[in-house]
Image (cartoon, rainbow, N blue to C red):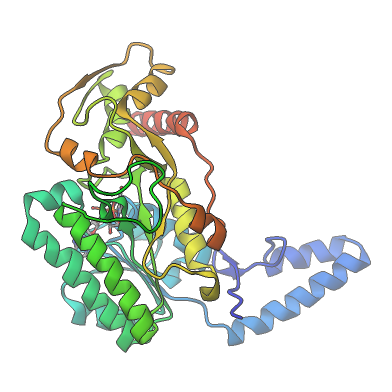
Length: 370
Ligand code: NAD
């Protein structure tokens, strides 16, 4: 069985989360028994470094909503120089300045391969995509980026024998015939958006490459993701990010979905934690070879409005549904993620009220700094 070592800031950590240096200092101060354990850990750590190579990770699409937070967390765990960030555009300053960055278009796979060779990459997190709202505006070019991009990277992972790959799917794989509440892992899936079709086809390709060539790609069906750090990237659930910004900036918000449109949603810290947890799980525990359901919370615009009003009593909202209402209505309202909880211990920290508190306070800080 494979035992992945754990790291903090690129240093191996022991059962109690201490690095070698911390353990050394501790062992000098504590009892004889702790000292013996500490000494063994230090000797083990010194040698393990020589025969377990540190993972080298390439993040494609690092400048986006997920990439901008995931890249920093990966650098924190694996060491800044072991995580190469890439995108077709420059990322935030904290990514550009904290480790290597390469300008890469996922559709130019030879250049991606060169970067993999240059840094001896063993894992890819492939996040580059055109999201649901934007993909409807340009269906065929979006299909190219979402589908050809994935197929090229799968092929590259096969040829280069990469250890592991992450490719996210979405709740957009579900469609109007899918059960809307507590949507199970396996059910009818008839997506009717170009984004959803590309995600469902992508899931089948991922499973195919796994079965036929042993390419270990892992994925989750992210629900709508909410974060304060980066603007949302043109998805149908973006209202749940915009509403917090507008509440602070203007005290009012015009929502592009109807007030009782329930959708599954998740706060970014929970999504990042889940992603890394899935990637660090032993392959033999994972029963789902395409993409795992992850649910988070389920709420509607009216729920967010009421949660914000607890902090900003004068906040007002209006509803002007646009083309994204039809997309939202074709998606589930809540997701059953029992299989993820069973296979890799998925868990969440945030509910709507906890998330609202953090969103409002962090966005306020952002505006004060600006
Ligand atoms: P995003 O749009 O914020 O970021 C995508 C990034 O990919 C951008 O920085 C963009 O510059 C980059 N990109 C686009 N085309 C590229 C190309 N040809 N080559 C290289 N980079 C390119 O998206 P996100 O929200 O960070 O989503 C990341 C992944 O997660 C996507 O696969 C998306 O489908 C999936 N997902 C996101 C959500 C969500 O709510 N954010 C929900 C479900 C699934």
